[in-house]
Length: 258
Image (tube, rainbow, N blue to C red; front, side):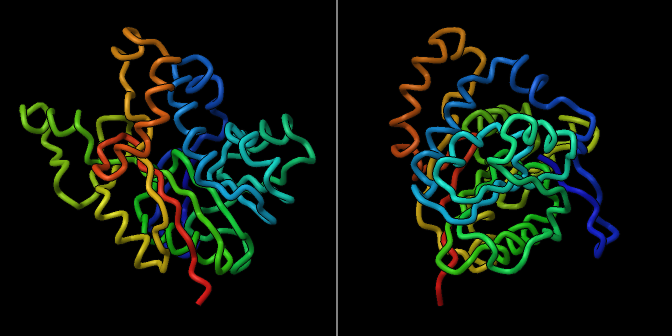
Protein backbone atom coordinates (compact mmCIF):
# COMPACT_ATOMS: atom_id res chain seq x y z
CA UNK A 1 0.00 0.00 0.00
CA UNK A 2 2.84 2.36 -0.72
CA UNK A 3 4.57 4.50 -3.25
CA UNK A 4 8.27 4.70 -3.90
CA UNK A 5 10.90 6.97 -5.34
CA UNK A 6 10.38 7.53 -9.03
CA UNK A 7 13.61 6.77 -10.85
CA UNK A 8 12.71 9.37 -13.45
CA UNK A 9 11.57 12.05 -11.02
CA UNK A 10 14.17 12.38 -8.27
CA UNK A 11 11.96 14.78 -6.32
CA UNK A 12 9.53 11.98 -5.49
CA UNK A 13 9.91 10.24 -2.14
CA UNK A 14 8.49 7.31 -0.27
CA UNK A 15 5.32 8.36 1.53
CA UNK A 16 4.84 5.15 3.49
CA UNK A 17 7.28 2.27 3.21
CA UNK A 18 5.67 -0.89 4.61
CA UNK A 19 8.72 -3.10 4.14
CA UNK A 20 9.34 -4.80 7.47
CA UNK A 21 5.97 -3.64 8.82
CA UNK A 22 3.25 -6.22 9.55
CA UNK A 23 0.37 -4.22 8.10
CA UNK A 24 -1.89 -7.26 8.09
CA UNK A 25 -1.60 -7.87 11.85
CA UNK A 26 -1.18 -4.35 13.18
CA UNK A 27 -3.67 -2.43 11.05
CA UNK A 28 -6.32 -5.07 10.34
CA UNK A 29 -6.16 -7.99 12.75
CA UNK A 30 -5.26 -6.09 15.93
CA UNK A 31 -7.69 -3.24 15.27
CA UNK A 32 -11.47 -3.18 15.08
CA UNK A 33 -11.76 -2.81 11.31
CA UNK A 34 -14.14 -5.63 10.38
CA UNK A 35 -16.76 -3.10 9.32
CA UNK A 36 -14.31 -1.26 7.03
CA UNK A 37 -13.17 -4.55 5.51
CA UNK A 38 -16.75 -5.63 4.77
CA UNK A 39 -17.63 -2.21 3.37
CA UNK A 40 -14.78 -2.53 0.88
CA UNK A 41 -15.91 -6.00 -0.10
CA UNK A 42 -19.52 -4.93 -0.69
CA UNK A 43 -18.36 -2.32 -3.19
CA UNK A 44 -15.81 -4.56 -4.91
CA UNK A 45 -18.31 -7.37 -5.44
CA UNK A 46 -20.61 -4.99 -7.29
CA UNK A 47 -18.01 -3.04 -9.28
CA UNK A 48 -15.49 -5.62 -10.50
CA UNK A 49 -16.39 -7.56 -13.64
CA UNK A 50 -17.66 -11.09 -13.01
CA UNK A 51 -15.18 -12.54 -15.50
CA UNK A 52 -11.68 -11.18 -16.11
CA UNK A 53 -8.79 -12.41 -18.22
CA UNK A 54 -5.75 -10.60 -16.82
CA UNK A 55 -6.28 -8.71 -13.57
CA UNK A 56 -3.98 -6.68 -11.31
CA UNK A 57 -4.51 -5.48 -7.73
CA UNK A 58 -2.48 -2.27 -7.53
CA UNK A 59 -1.03 -1.63 -4.06
CA UNK A 60 -2.71 -4.90 -3.11
CA UNK A 61 -0.31 -5.59 -0.26
CA UNK A 62 -0.71 -8.95 1.43
CA UNK A 63 -3.77 -9.82 -0.64
CA UNK A 64 -6.47 -8.81 1.84
CA UNK A 65 -9.03 -8.69 -0.95
CA UNK A 66 -7.65 -11.51 -3.12
CA UNK A 67 -10.52 -13.86 -2.33
CA UNK A 68 -12.84 -11.31 -3.95
CA UNK A 69 -11.17 -11.60 -7.37
CA UNK A 70 -9.05 -14.74 -7.84
CA UNK A 71 -12.13 -16.80 -8.74
CA UNK A 72 -13.22 -14.17 -11.29
CA UNK A 73 -9.91 -13.85 -13.15
CA UNK A 74 -7.96 -16.34 -15.24
CA UNK A 75 -4.75 -14.60 -14.15
CA UNK A 76 -4.31 -12.40 -11.05
CA UNK A 77 -1.32 -10.25 -10.07
CA UNK A 78 -0.73 -8.27 -6.90
CA UNK A 79 1.52 -5.23 -7.30
CA UNK A 80 3.00 -3.39 -4.32
CA UNK A 81 6.14 -1.59 -3.23
CA UNK A 82 6.41 -3.68 -0.05
CA UNK A 83 8.16 -7.01 -0.58
CA UNK A 84 7.17 -7.90 2.99
CA UNK A 85 3.49 -7.77 2.10
CA UNK A 86 3.94 -9.49 -1.24
CA UNK A 87 5.64 -12.40 0.48
CA UNK A 88 2.65 -12.73 2.82
CA UNK A 89 0.35 -12.80 -0.20
CA UNK A 90 2.43 -15.44 -1.96
CA UNK A 91 2.67 -17.56 1.18
CA UNK A 92 -1.12 -17.60 1.45
CA UNK A 93 -2.22 -17.93 -2.16
CA UNK A 94 0.77 -19.61 -3.82
CA UNK A 95 0.27 -20.24 -7.54
CA UNK A 96 -3.18 -18.67 -7.50
CA UNK A 97 -1.56 -15.23 -7.79
CA UNK A 98 1.52 -13.58 -9.25
CA UNK A 99 3.31 -10.83 -7.32
CA UNK A 100 5.32 -7.90 -8.58
CA UNK A 101 7.17 -5.20 -6.65
CA UNK A 102 7.87 -1.77 -8.06
CA UNK A 103 7.18 1.92 -8.34
CA UNK A 104 3.62 3.21 -8.65
CA UNK A 105 4.85 6.14 -10.77
CA UNK A 106 6.48 3.80 -13.29
CA UNK A 107 4.52 0.56 -13.21
CA UNK A 108 6.56 -2.46 -14.39
CA UNK A 109 3.88 -3.53 -16.85
CA UNK A 110 3.31 -3.19 -20.60
CA UNK A 111 0.85 -0.82 -22.19
CA UNK A 112 -2.69 -2.29 -22.31
CA UNK A 113 -1.59 -5.37 -20.34
CA UNK A 114 -4.63 -5.82 -18.09
CA UNK A 115 -8.33 -5.96 -18.87
CA UNK A 116 -9.21 -4.98 -15.29
CA UNK A 117 -7.57 -3.57 -12.18
CA UNK A 118 -8.30 -2.67 -8.57
CA UNK A 119 -6.70 -0.10 -6.26
CA UNK A 120 -7.99 0.23 -2.68
CA UNK A 121 -6.67 2.22 0.30
CA UNK A 122 -3.72 3.59 -1.62
CA UNK A 123 -4.50 7.08 -2.95
CA UNK A 124 -3.80 8.72 0.42
CA UNK A 125 -0.12 7.83 -0.07
CA UNK A 126 0.28 9.52 -3.45
CA UNK A 127 1.55 13.05 -3.82
CA UNK A 128 1.27 12.99 -7.62
CA UNK A 129 -2.17 11.51 -8.23
CA UNK A 130 -2.30 12.56 -11.87
CA UNK A 131 0.86 10.57 -12.59
CA UNK A 132 -0.63 7.54 -10.84
CA UNK A 133 -3.88 7.85 -12.78
CA UNK A 134 -1.97 8.14 -16.06
CA UNK A 135 -0.02 4.97 -15.27
CA UNK A 136 -3.19 3.05 -14.41
CA UNK A 137 -4.71 4.19 -17.68
CA UNK A 138 -1.59 3.13 -19.59
CA UNK A 139 -1.54 -0.47 -18.33
CA UNK A 140 -5.31 -0.96 -18.76
CA UNK A 141 -6.50 -2.31 -22.11
CA UNK A 142 -9.10 -0.41 -24.17
CA UNK A 143 -12.53 -1.41 -22.92
CA UNK A 144 -10.99 -2.40 -19.58
CA UNK A 145 -12.43 -1.63 -16.14
CA UNK A 146 -10.60 0.02 -13.23
CA UNK A 147 -12.08 0.09 -9.73
CA UNK A 148 -10.35 2.74 -7.65
CA UNK A 149 -11.00 3.79 -4.05
CA UNK A 150 -10.18 7.38 -3.12
CA UNK A 151 -9.62 8.91 0.32
CA UNK A 152 -12.27 11.63 0.46
CA UNK A 153 -11.54 15.15 1.62
CA UNK A 154 -15.19 16.22 1.71
CA UNK A 155 -16.69 14.18 4.57
CA UNK A 156 -19.29 15.29 7.11
CA UNK A 157 -16.92 14.99 10.13
CA UNK A 158 -14.36 17.12 8.31
CA UNK A 159 -17.03 19.68 7.52
CA UNK A 160 -18.07 19.95 11.16
CA UNK A 161 -14.46 20.21 12.31
CA UNK A 162 -13.92 23.02 9.84
CA UNK A 163 -17.16 24.86 10.72
CA UNK A 164 -16.41 24.69 14.45
CA UNK A 165 -12.79 25.71 13.91
CA UNK A 166 -11.40 22.38 15.08
CA UNK A 167 -9.45 22.11 11.85
CA UNK A 168 -8.06 24.54 9.30
CA UNK A 169 -8.49 22.04 6.45
CA UNK A 170 -11.25 23.37 4.21
CA UNK A 171 -13.17 20.32 2.89
CA UNK A 172 -14.84 22.47 0.22
CA UNK A 173 -11.53 23.54 -1.33
CA UNK A 174 -10.85 21.31 -4.32
CA UNK A 175 -7.11 21.21 -3.78
CA UNK A 176 -5.75 18.00 -2.16
CA UNK A 177 -5.21 18.23 1.58
CA UNK A 178 -2.00 17.03 3.19
CA UNK A 179 -2.75 15.78 6.68
CA UNK A 180 0.68 16.15 8.25
CA UNK A 181 -0.52 15.36 11.76
CA UNK A 182 -1.27 11.69 10.99
CA UNK A 183 2.37 10.61 10.76
CA UNK A 184 5.72 12.09 9.89
CA UNK A 185 4.91 12.24 6.17
CA UNK A 186 1.17 12.71 6.27
CA UNK A 187 -1.68 11.41 4.15
CA UNK A 188 -3.37 13.00 1.14
CA UNK A 189 -7.13 13.38 0.83
CA UNK A 190 -8.88 14.35 -2.38
CA UNK A 191 -12.00 16.36 -3.14
CA UNK A 192 -14.38 14.35 -5.40
CA UNK A 193 -14.46 17.09 -8.04
CA UNK A 194 -10.67 17.21 -8.11
CA UNK A 195 -10.14 13.45 -8.41
CA UNK A 196 -12.82 13.11 -11.05
CA UNK A 197 -11.02 15.70 -13.16
CA UNK A 198 -7.79 13.73 -12.66
CA UNK A 199 -9.42 10.57 -13.99
CA UNK A 200 -10.93 12.40 -16.95
CA UNK A 201 -7.60 14.02 -17.85
CA UNK A 202 -6.06 10.57 -18.00
CA UNK A 203 -8.78 9.52 -20.42
CA UNK A 204 -11.02 7.47 -18.13
CA UNK A 205 -14.79 7.44 -18.38
CA UNK A 206 -16.58 7.32 -15.01
CA UNK A 207 -19.15 4.51 -15.12
CA UNK A 208 -20.32 4.09 -11.51
CA UNK A 209 -19.69 5.68 -8.11
CA UNK A 210 -20.20 4.23 -4.62
CA UNK A 211 -20.11 5.85 -1.19
CA UNK A 212 -18.18 3.46 1.09
CA UNK A 213 -17.54 3.17 4.84
CA UNK A 214 -20.41 5.58 5.44
CA UNK A 215 -20.61 4.67 9.14
CA UNK A 216 -16.90 4.61 9.95
CA UNK A 217 -17.03 5.67 13.58
CA UNK A 218 -15.78 4.15 16.80
CA UNK A 219 -18.91 5.35 18.60
CA UNK A 220 -21.27 3.88 16.02
CA UNK A 221 -19.46 0.54 16.20
CA UNK A 222 -19.90 0.44 19.97
CA UNK A 223 -23.58 1.41 19.81
CA UNK A 224 -24.78 -0.70 16.88
CA UNK A 225 -22.09 -3.31 16.30
CA UNK A 226 -20.48 -4.40 13.04
CA UNK A 227 -23.34 -6.57 11.73
CA UNK A 228 -25.91 -3.76 11.92
CA UNK A 229 -23.59 -1.24 10.30
CA UNK A 230 -22.78 -3.64 7.48
CA UNK A 231 -26.50 -4.11 6.77
CA UNK A 232 -26.96 -0.34 6.64
CA UNK A 233 -23.87 -0.01 4.46
CA UNK A 234 -25.29 -2.23 1.73
CA UNK A 235 -28.04 0.21 0.86
CA UNK A 236 -26.17 3.39 1.77
CA UNK A 237 -23.40 2.83 -0.77
CA UNK A 238 -25.75 3.49 -3.66
CA UNK A 239 -28.17 5.87 -1.94
CA UNK A 240 -25.45 8.22 -0.67
CA UNK A 241 -23.20 8.04 -3.73
CA UNK A 242 -24.52 11.29 -5.28
CA UNK A 243 -23.49 13.39 -2.26
CA UNK A 244 -20.01 11.84 -1.97
CA UNK A 245 -19.66 12.44 1.80
CA UNK A 246 -18.18 9.07 2.85
CA UNK A 247 -14.53 8.54 3.87
CA UNK A 248 -14.03 6.31 0.83
CA UNK A 249 -15.39 6.97 -2.64
CA UNK A 250 -15.23 4.08 -5.09
CA UNK A 251 -15.07 4.71 -8.81
CA UNK A 252 -15.68 2.22 -11.57
CA UNK A 253 -13.77 3.61 -14.54
CA UNK A 254 -13.57 2.47 -18.14
CA UNK A 255 -10.80 3.01 -20.66
CA UNK A 256 -12.67 3.79 -23.90
CA UNK A 257 -12.05 1.52 -26.88
CA UNK A 258 -11.65 4.46 -29.23
